[in-house]
Length: 429
Figure 1: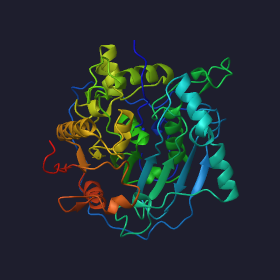
Figure 2: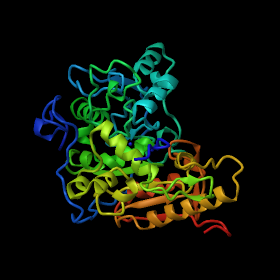
Figure 3: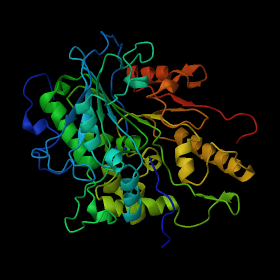
């Protein structure tokens, strides 16, 4: 088998005491998120009510960094075995929640994980830098786009409780494998923990036990890049454990990956190699990370190829697997996936690269237009990567609708899907 050429970045009721049966798990040592598996034949429907949203004062409390207890959550570990962490920005007067999975690429074998560790391991594979900087008072917290407390910049979430799960598992939030104590060398992929699912489980359990999440009326589960992949893989698992009666929605930004041939510079066309680099990557990564993609997809899969598809958001959202309403935010020729496919859209592209990019954008439009009927989308014809948590949330526009307003419309009317897919300019397919 050919070796992969590139790593693909991408993932209760009332207040008071919460009964153990309603938690994400029955105990801190139980397995990671497990929804009731359902096959692809499960009926996809949206029953969330429209919400005439009223707003309170903007969130005013300072951000806090929370380190998960390894005694309580022994599996919720970063790659290097340090504790998983999350940031929280509380608004105790609000029952609205935005819960965000951070992105940051991935590593999937001995070589890519060693490279990731040697280049920026303390930031991407460990919580040491975060906890040190928080103690020093030098840690920066998100403040733009959906994280802003300015109601003009962020009409939907400026007054919400906001949580950001910090990404340090390098597994697109989907892994469930412990490090091998015998693998002492950082050049051995078995040296690393891949516990993205356990970190998600632990954070939601903490929010249910020690924050006001049991009283939530509205929860948006979102993420960018690898975090968006994580949303696709875990959104139904999380939804199954959320407070009864709460409106629960997903919002993956820049994680809509699908199987597409890499660019062949020798021909200026799509590579004809089979399997594609994308498929090889998923197979190798899944073998090293453990864990899984979407539960219903794996329950319906009968072949190894079908199981591989369960870690492809483009497949999950077009084959009846994700039952939670999503707003899929995806720029059509996002420079991040295209870079991994072999094209640098920020350089002076030649005719072959330009044609490949246009065909990739056309395929993105085709798949987004064919996603399951309960999902919405917002797809600019440009190359930006993750737009909802930065200034682009107020500038990206399709047919007069700005992204921040599309987010607000989805939040208010999640069961009225809107497909905003920008048409290509003249001359492009």
